Length: 435
Image: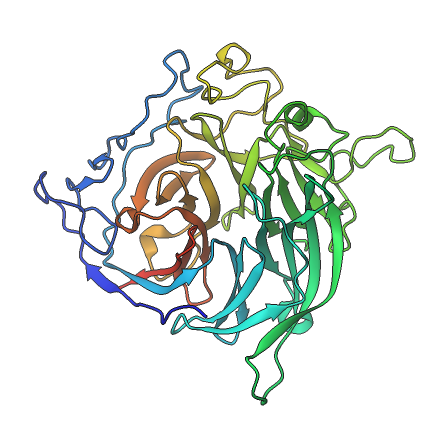
């Protein structure tokens, strides 16, 4: 059983004109103007410092594509570490009655009380998973009609014989525990059904694996290209689902209106589930509350992490074009970043942050965060706040740097707060709200 949750509540007002030598305020992770964050000074209007130089020969394709001006939250913020001892949490979903469901990569789900952060139940009936590299039990979302049907959708990496594994998208009914009895309460996954099974690769990496519902009730699914050749090149193939964003029904079929759903009567036809392609390792999907458009974030190679505005049938270039280099410092396709008929990322982190999950903030508790995009950063060990105007990123802030944690996922809760999980064997559940 997990340790008793430790709650740390610290609130400060962010005061402009703080002395340049001021340190990051302990326990909050929001540097005042002029204060020094762990990776450099914060000066509103000037780009944030980076700890890794971009590729010298690569330039942004348009102004503001990289290193947007720094912004600073002025609302007094309280940060609560609601729970410790989560085992590499990956995804979270809210299931009503003041409870949330959290997945853990080794293969477990926990139900936590939002008010106290206390685990109140486990979940049984979870399929066997491969916990290795990027693999494990990964994302989870609730059905738009969860209050009526109690259906959840989740992704995991399943074992497929010796030295083989692959991603599965599944659904199940989350049955609540029975009241009474002496045993620890357990929710149950009933009627676990496979919706999609990705094949064609063996290496334990780059699964992608984020889920989000659109307004029509169809499910977007992100899939990585599995890192190594030859599967890396399948990101450009319309006959493979690797390196793609898919759009499927809750029965696992291609959603109507997908760009490649024509000519399916032919023996050799594109995969009708594909919505966009040319992706590397997309671990984040979120739909804008302003216009309903889909945004995505993905890991670049050595540098060049991306935020993309996803278009129907669009090609995002990987591995034909990329910002950053291979891990051995060699250029990718000669260092090319622009190619006809491929989309440019709306934002590029030239220095690696390793983006995890992301969500838009649409609640009213913190007005200056309204419609901002929040992106979890694993290697960057912060929560990135991105201010968007139209299809451009016009401001960036780094939050929670004082936690010194790999931030895995972020979701807006029904209480209007932001909820964050950190990727560690002693992972944390953190709540951000006005103090």
